[in-house]
Structure formats: C-alpha cells, structure tokens
Amino acid sequence: MKIRKNDNVVLIAGNNKGKTGKVLKVFPKVSKIIVEGINVRKRHTKPNQTNPQGGILEKEMPVHVSNVMLIDPKTNAGTRLGSQIILDDKTGKKKRARVSRASGEMI
Image (cartoon, rainbow, N blue to C red):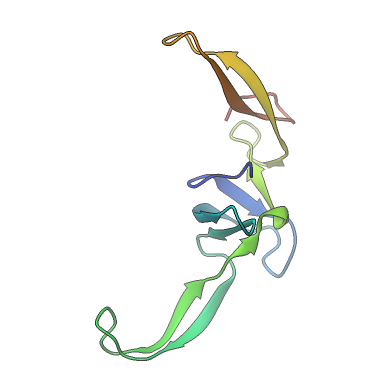
C-alpha cells in the first residue's frame, strides 16, 4: 500500500467525494484506511469506563484505499504515486522514495 499514516488524501469516490483529510490509521491486510472527518457514522454505545454516559457517538469508519488519492504538496491536487530509488547521503545505502507522478516531486 502506498498510502501511509499522516498523509493528506482526497476522496475520489463515494458519498464524500472531493473532501480531503489526514490519514489516522492504516489497515494494510484489508486495504482500508481511516481518514479524519470522512465516512463518519453514528454509533449507539452503552455506558462504559471510557465513556460513562454512553449515548450516540460519531465515529470515522474505514474507507477502501482505492477510493482515495494522495494530495501532491506542490499542486495541492490528487496525484498517483510512483517510487524512485535514491542514494542516502549519510549511510550510502539505497532507499526507495515515493514520488508524485504529476509533478515528479518526492513526498
């Protein structure tokens, strides 16, 4: 999966199409992510120790990773991702960097 935690993404499909948010959690085994403020559902919860009053809480639910695009920092629009092998100056080892397909800039 090319999307990581703390990335800024834009939704390209579904009810929240066009909205942007920050990735809070990634589930690579099922190819889903949780985005801040996106796909919010109401959950009816019983009182418990963390929430003594209970009631109706709003909670972000997972979205499939195919329905989001990473936001390019240069153009501030959705972009596809590629990878590029670069040489690390400090260690001298090869590293793989994520690169925007639209602008060619490293992310």
